[in-house]
Length: 224
Image (tube, rainbow, N blue to C red; front, side, top):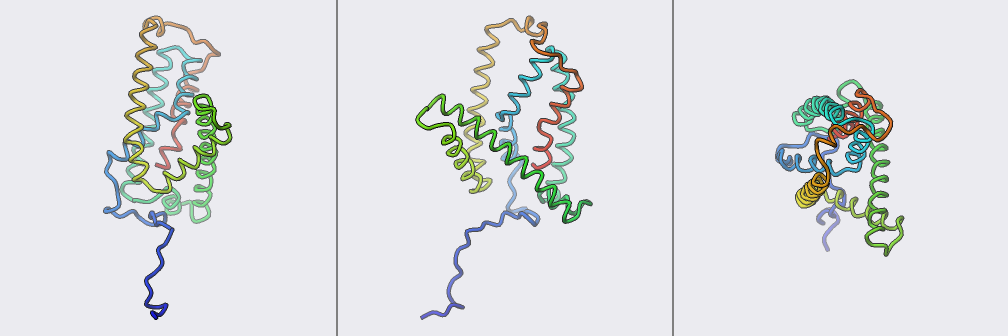
């Protein structure tokens, strides 16, 4: 009978994804894999709400320049934060600990990010459930929300590879769907007429519109 000391170690259910250490070069993915997933963020509910808000409260050219300036501000932050992440290979909380926040401060940064993402995950699950109920009313909204949330959680728990596989399929399909929808809608209206049309809702200032664009994904840029 083999002794306990000579027995093989039991497989661990915990996967170390370098949460507290630098990600080694051998475990890193190329820029394209990361870019596909980040590009998939255009399918987020927040982006549709942002476009609807700007279109409802701003004229075409005012909205155009608000989006342009807001995107430039966002990209400046994204590029510099991305350079830090690429060089250090550490997550946001650990980097925060080493850049002046300390152990307690970095924990608060991680807590704030976690709570905000949990809330947004709940909103996304609810919106997805509403759409699924409209298409397949075989389950109530709360049940579809639970199913959707568990499915997404299972994909994320399997790691970046599973998320990458899903993004490779869904992002191109989504871009095709959006391209088709935009083409159909623009074929029904005059572009010149739309550009000259006054906003339908209360006026939104240029500063407010720019802030909405830059702030709409600033947390995502930081945690990426």
